[in-house]
Length: 205
Length: 205
Image (cartoon, rainbow over all chains, first blue to last red; front, side, top):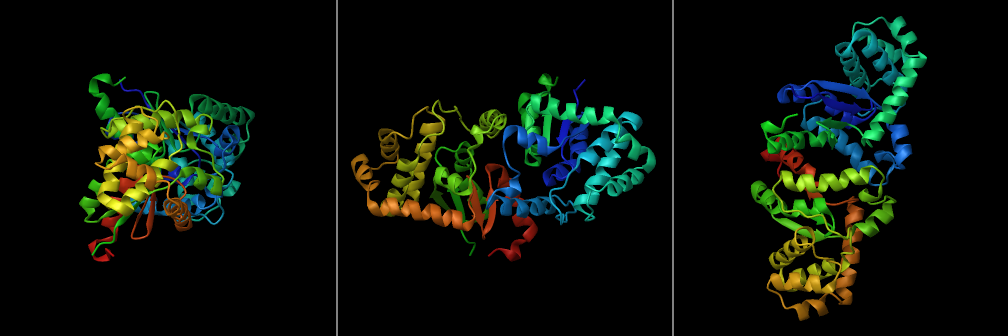
């Protein structure tokens, strides 16, 4: 009875994209379901008073290099987006609606399509038509998604989801909780494995 | 004829400490010498306008947790220092003097003693007597080190070393260059291996 992995991500975060291609395999390896939680880094950064990585001098240049290099090292298709970062509120809302209406598997198909559109196919996912095309790729009706993502309860759900994430300690993305243990970054995947091994099978919650 | 690995670190950086315990083994594994470069994160952060990790709300709490956890996952003795971070200018200057007078191997012995004093033995390495005790542990004469670390040329060497580091793209620690490829963080050690494998042996500089 292992508890699920909670996976927090922003659709315009390159390391979130890398994590999105591996997190379900990690879950399978560890015998755990994965719950996907779209968040928006903008409000999170504003709350804690940090600036996006790429806006820091020197560090930003390194980050751009490391995004593409990390993807290459893990065989993940990656073309750095011309417009970066972009607003992902539409994609996040659409995902929450899809999850509520069609379940987590469909929502995940949609998320993969959005990530791929942005980081591999050179599309601007801040544009509603790109979000809706991703929904169609996941087998969903674009018109229904277009309406659903505008619903007040969906807007409220995203807002409260982000608040719950920061309350839990999320300050960046990707961010993972496994048995309430926090791990920030795609580069912590191996640490998760090590951490579980150290803790021993008897301690699995 | 592999070129050496350049290893930049600050004596009060926990991830630098972790890296210091593994970087020579990494060099041996990759058939490369390792050049150790003490820097000071204070002036580096000031130059690029970032605040230390532990001063960021939420993120700081996670960082403290991740320091100790990372050390534990790699079997590195770690007791988070009561006073953190501390000024490491004395230790850095002493190391440069030891390197100049007694060579890189002695300087490295000294560096290990300083890191251990701070992150395992609960000592305040901003205090000259702690720095000198580390020098003695490395088989050096404390009086000579005390004089050497005050020399103007040593002070200038540290300053220009930090300037050269930032000019090269260093914005944090640990920071590694291997064939001019930059890697930031102890968590990039595996990426270095992957990167070299991908590049293939024929491409070794």
